[in-house]
Image (cartoon, one colour):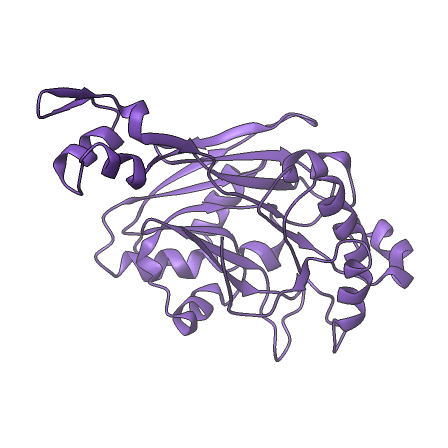
Length: 302
């Protein structure tokens, strides 16, 4: 099970009801942040998320509303019992930006930080992290500064067919554990192979897009995703303004989800000009019905 918490849903300017951008993904106890705008650690506190769980931060781009909370988070976890390495990933320029950020204030950094700068090419899905149970890829998007979209993949899992086990006289215990790990066992003199009682199932996929105008790479990265989280800064009547500033409308985000054959779309990054996002949502649902508008501290289980 993967749980995503939307920590901020406003675009450049926070509002009374919406903080700026950050998404928290937790998988088997490991926390990952996608962007970390101003106030992110306070949002985590309100949501009941332990800031010490964060092991990786994936930066979409270096506009302040997406990164200004990083330094405060580092200082906070450094004053806890944090003993892991904090990995930070981002587009070209990330190492220089992190250097200046770490030297912009005075504090004793107690966190081991490893900064990874990725340089994917347009149309290329670039492997960022490849761990035992999940991987993260990215692809360059088209914004006013270098910007990345990320896809989080749960790797294929082995499932045990308990009905098949029962037919063979197996009950829950060490033998089933061995079979689930791909090891053959013997029961009452009879050999049982893993393939007799197990099967493989596809893992979940989540695509997260920061700021961008509509480009084919969005569809490429969102293909068959269980969840797509995408910016929807403007309504369709301001599509020209969206193009001017290299952002998207809700309807354009929905078109991406539709063409990618995704299962669910969450809209976010709403302009502060909108007191209500109902029009944005309605325009998106007209294209892709399984769409929701994000709100701060929204939780989604995938």
